[in-house]
Image (cartoon, rainbow, N blue to C red; front, side):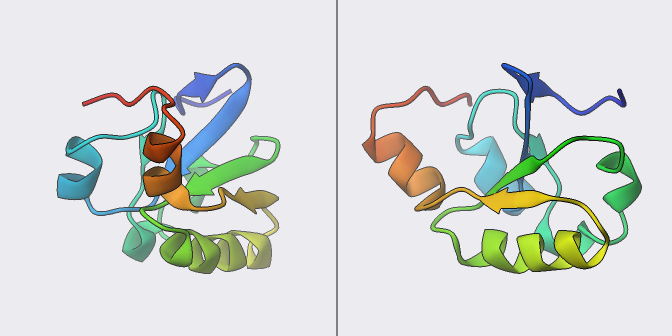
Amino acid sequence: MNDLSVLHGVVIIDVREPDEYAGGHVPAAVNIPLGDIRERSAEIHGSDTVYVICQSGRRSAFACEALESLGIASVNVPGGTAAWIAAGLPVQQ
């Protein structure tokens, strides 16, 4: 496996900008901004299904489309980081 962080065997990609990511993110999520997703797709290849998260779900939906076009199975995390935080799930600064 490459150097992507894994949480309980799940690869999570956070496609928000670095400043948003630094403000709080899902533990073990790797920051690959949406604008870099195609360029950095080699970092993701070889992983099973990846979970993609942003703030609300819009950017991660675009990222999932891009990943699927590259042959990488992906799942858009519904509601994004905002829903994650609202559900009381852990956040890393």
